[in-house]
Length: 150
Length: 150
Image 1: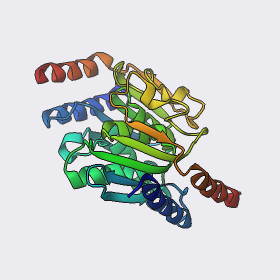
Image 2: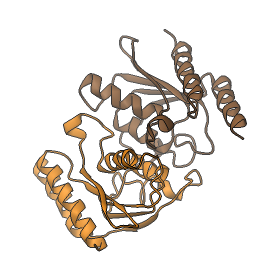
Image 3: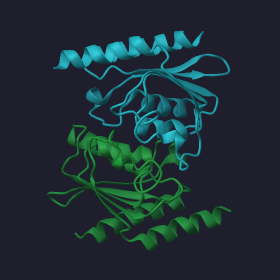
Image 4: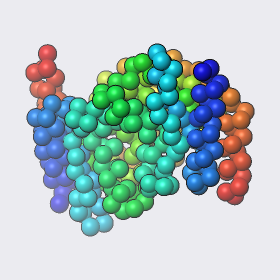
């Protein structure tokens, strides 16, 4: 599978999350050596009432459970929106190899905006980061969700 | 109960976590109106193999479950160590009213160090912060844990 195909899979998770009334963000966790998708999830904040229920957190927790260890060094993570500081720090703790994200998030992002978590000396593992993959579509999905909310 | 008593409770959680082989960090979540302790926890990263298993995350997830909603606006959180960026952002998302922490964490902290999550324009709720409460004892517990590891 190619990067765009993984992001397409993440996009479908985002779309499904939006239909459930969640902010439409979706993600997939990929075993970088085999190319297999380990887990896929959309946001679940509204469904579970858990403010930490972002797609990336769900994947990291599921991935750790599946591998039986907290470090997911051979994994890549694809997510439709630039991670917030909570998810960026969790990605660092999980030792994710490479992070691909779709839309940039100037308002609440923590990778290329605000606290820029990976660029701090207090960050002890910085994944490779590819931002803006399939950006237009990921961004439009979020914009249309918030437009309908108003 | 006074602030020091809550931190004492958090300290006991930290101490118990250390005995389980976890980095000795403990926390309590308090209902600010009644003064009741809602939840108490120590780190559970090693036990669960979950890199996001910090004491603060466990409390926020438990608190949201107990109250049935993601916003814990009437709650204060006491933790023995300055929160990392992941926990700081989760504290912000949960709308925690006031954060008390014990030891400062220049190496990995995210409140007074590194990304200073609450000071960013991308942070949409900043709790009141009281740092250094019972600092010496909280700090010594961590130092002695890491000394024994070496």
